[in-house]
Image (cartoon, rainbow, N blue to C red):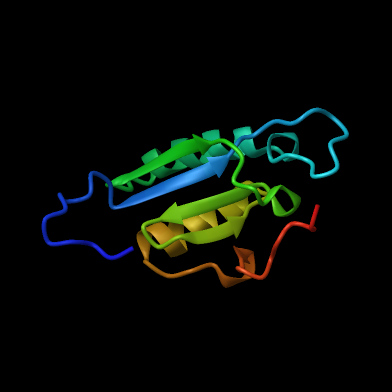
Length: 118
């Protein structure tokens, strides 16, 4: 969706949503929380603060509907999706995407990465 000239300036330069959705054990789609997303979110928030990254917000999100690929992270305004499993991957995203403005291609989820049809 395009930005309009009358839109207010963004409150944050980047908004990072980390799926922390929790489903019942054994659910066929799984869930990001059971894959450690809450700890990764906490680490990302603390690490971004340590690094002094200004103008970003790291938030929990409910289901982002990409559970099979999670833990799922999406960064706006770019709308870039990542699969994040480790603290090292969090560090790489913080540095390359949020500090340098690049992308971590090997962690990116593509639009063709879809959950199985129900």
